[in-house]
Amino acid sequence: MTAMETLSARALAAPQSGIVELVNYARGRKGLIPLWAGEGDLPTPEFINKATKDALDAGETFYTWQRGLPELRQALSRFYERHFSVSLPMEHFFATSSGMHAINLCVQALTAPGDEIIYLTPSWPNIVAAVGIAGAKPVSVPVDFVGGGWSLDIAKLEAAITPRTRALFINTPSNPTGWTATEEDLTAILALARRHGLWIIADEIYALYYYNGARAPSFMDVQTPDDLIIYANSFSKNWSMTGWRVGWIVAPPSIGQVLENLIQYSSSGLTPFMQRGAIAALDQGDDFLRSNIERARTSRDILCDTLIATNRVQTLKPDGALYAFLKVDGIEDPRAAAFDIVDKTLVGLAPGTAFGPGGGAFLRACFLRDPKQVEEAAGRLADYILKL
Image: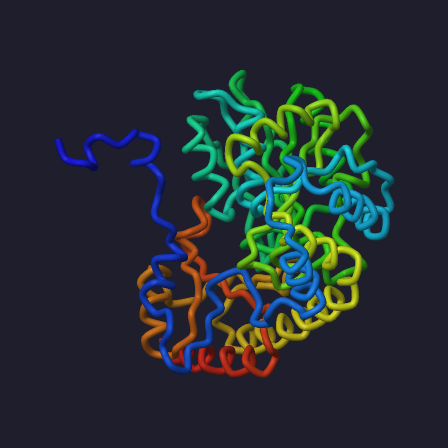
């Protein structure tokens, strides 16, 4: 037997990332403008780095609290009080080794092999892979693309529920579409979950990247203390910390010991000196976060206005998140087009085929970058599109 033949079926079924495939193909090219990944171009702010370096110098390199430093969990509590107007004691918060780790823990906590999790598609592909690797079944429900925008049909969501369904995975604002649930949407989704006794896994990583108000509507606005909702989140986008791999979970304290156990057997706790940087981000980072959001808004407008003006691109300016999801007239194979675009224009886009059912006709561009660089990228893309 070959080594591959001895691997588990779940591992073998884990798909190659359609985003990483393109990144590996073109990474490092001179003059490249990389809009393919969900990150900005600014490094982590110095006040966060300093807090981390100070902790290293102070010798904070030992095993630590599995749930996270009490100071970090208290800082998360203050963050939610400021931005979500909720009062949650630190017992609701759990530090994780990235947002992806948080999602994996949520899936592990809620499913057994053969169970189902319903998710909205097009979607960030990692949730689908996480569910499959855990032995559960991801079930897709499409959001509808009409007139360049996206909307959710609650009846379709309910129709996907079976006796094996354990949870609804709801990412809003959405990666990649920018779809943002209204408070009415969230109320309807929550009512559905209550009727069927389902958990909601709420991915609200982009909640503050919202362009029609202070933040996007959140399940925090409509839930009661008894609702079965668990939140997965990350420091990556808000404070330019993608490479740090630091995240968190918000969950009912009643399941805290289970989450602590899962952390113990997956990472044994988040690095303590990085937690000190995370505390600085939460307590001192609101101004940086606001400037990042305004930077994204400016670049969103530049990118979308330029491409819409070609009369060859179907999209609306997204209400939230960091992405323009573009349907381009004349492109029938977005994966092949993404490789062609990076070769001919040196602009890196993610192919819509990477985002599951409903994404195959699209290309995704992340606009959290220097507006001048986005303007250059938009011009190159417009020239390419007009030559199709």
